[in-house]
Length: 264
Image 1: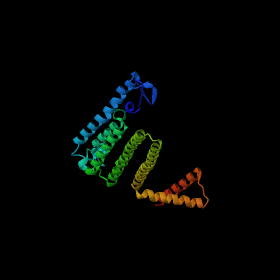
Image 2 (image 1 turned 45 degrees about the horizontal axis):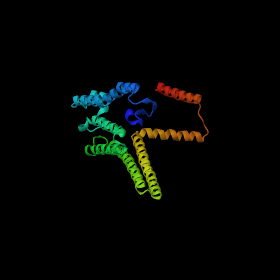
Image 3 (image 1 turned 120 degrees about the horizontal axis):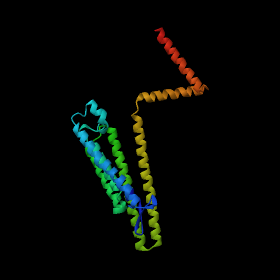
Image 4 (image 1 turned 90 degrees about the horizontal axis):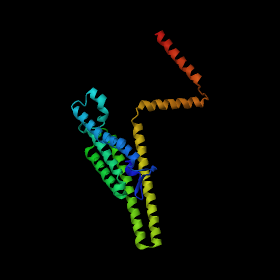
């Protein structure tokens, strides 16, 4: 992916933007691509989904057994029983997004954003039609995640399209006033759309944090409120504990508890 995304053409040479002294697919670069890059791609996106699918299909009739859940439950317990193989689908969806995001230098930025939009629409449609997650909250979170990604890629697609339209207007009319007005309109559009995308992503992050906090047990919040109230009361009384005082207080409590047990 680094070879495809981070290269820049200079004359007849193709240089790696992360290291301008390195020529793409040169001797040293080819060694890393063939020796590390391609094997990792094959391992993660070919061997891994095949292995997951084979293991889950083998134990498809024992998915409720304790031993199977202990060893392989993380692959399927968060999905509905009829979609126990959905983890394989998730891996292939990730592969489609990665491959699409690495095609800009071959098909152009506009076509790349368009293709990525199509991939995300397909993923979103699969989520809506299948509803694979066992938890409604997680399912809703998946909707929001793909929806925010789709909004972001649509904004990128519109940026490229609007930029090309602005350049076309400036070149056809040859009017400096029209060109400057088109540029100002494009800058205003970018700012408005950028703020909208930022708000959408921030709302998703806040919703994710709130959902994670809501999963904590009520005992955690009760204990947290109790300790916070206790600390405020002690602070109001002007008492500050030191490590020595904490150790002495703990020791006295343990001694009192031991004495009560002995008396019983």
